[in-house]
Length: 287
Image (cartoon, rainbow, N blue to C red; front, top):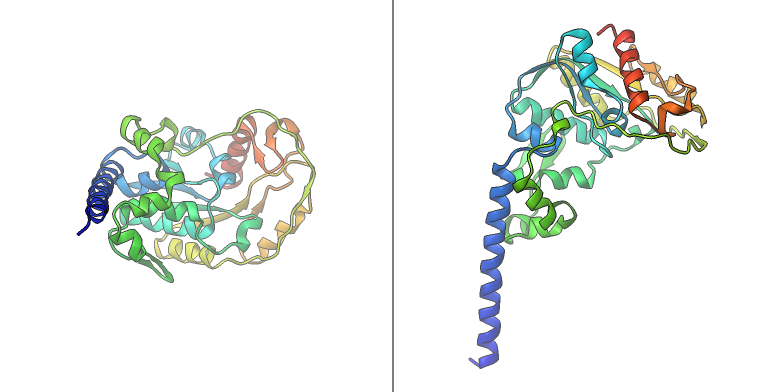
C-alpha cells in the first residue's frame, strides 16, 4: 500500500471517529437538556391535564395569551401554536403531547387560507430528528429516519444544519428553556405597514383538521374553530364564512377589528391587539 493510500485511510478513520463523537455529543445534548421549543416541550416534559389547548400556526402563537385566559377563568391553558406550522404538524404535535400524558377538555383550531396545505413542514420534521429512534406511526403518517440519517454518523444533524448548527447546539447546552415556552404566547410588537392584500381560499377541507376533530371526539373533548383577525385592509375576508358549512360553531374574526394600531402587519396582531382579542375569545366561547 502506497504512502498516499495510507494517508487517505488514516484521514477517513479520523473523520469517522470525529463524526461518531459529534453524533454522540449532539444526541446527548438534545436528548438530555431542558426543552427550548414547543416540540421539545411536548416530547421531553411529562404532560398533565389542560382545560384549553390551542394549536395552529403563528396566527395562534402570536394571538392567544394563555396567562389572560388562566387569570380570567381560573382554568389551565396552553398555546402550542408554532410559526409556519401546517395542520399535519399540529396533528402530530397533539399526538406527541398525548403520548406523554396530555389530556384536555377543549381544543381550539385556527382556520385560514393555509388549510389547503396537507403536508408536514420541513422545519417541523427536522425538529423531530433527534427524537426518532424508530418508526412512529399515526394514521396515514409515518415518521422515520432515512437510511442515511440513521446509519451515517452525524448526517442527520448535518442535513438540517440550519436547525442544528453549532450555535443551536451551544444554546441548547447553556441556555435554559425560554420563559414563554410553557404558556406559548410569543407576541409581535409595533405597528407595521398594513398593506392591502386579498384572501384566496382555494379549499375548505383538510385531512388533518378532520383527524384533529376525530381525536377530540375520541378524547371526549370539545373542539372549537375560529379564524384570527386580519387588518381592515385585507380584502375578501368574508370568504372564511364558508367554513361555517363544515365546522360547527365556527367564528370568523377576520374583519372584526378596524383599528390598525392593533396590528404588527396585515396578517398578525401585535401585543396590544392580542390582549384585546384573547379577551374577546374568552367572552365569545364562554371560557
